[in-house]
Length: 82
Image (tube, rainbow, N blue to C red; front, side, top):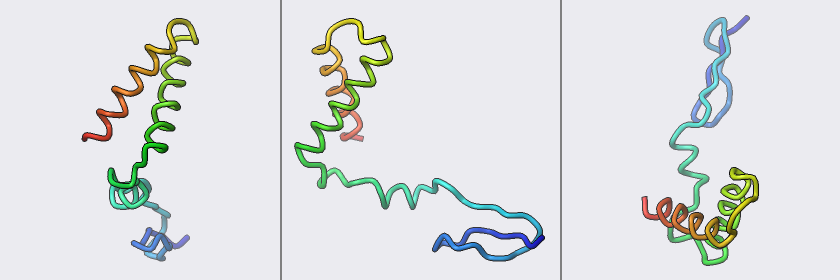
C-alpha cells in the first residue's frame, strides 16, 4: 500500500507504505483562534458564561453561581492576557 503524508495544504501525498497525517499543528490552531483584538464584549461574556457552567458542573451544581462566575472571569482574564 502506498505511504501518504500530509502536505501544508492538508492534501495527502503518496510517499511509501503507511499513511501519516499531522493533526493539531500550532500553525493551524493559531489561524483559527481569534486574536485578542477580535474579542468583543459579547464574545468575552459568552466565554465567561460557558466557563462558569463547566465550573458548576465539575462540582455538581452545588454552591454559589456568583462564585462560579467570579472564578470564570478570573480564568478568562488570565487566558486573554497570555
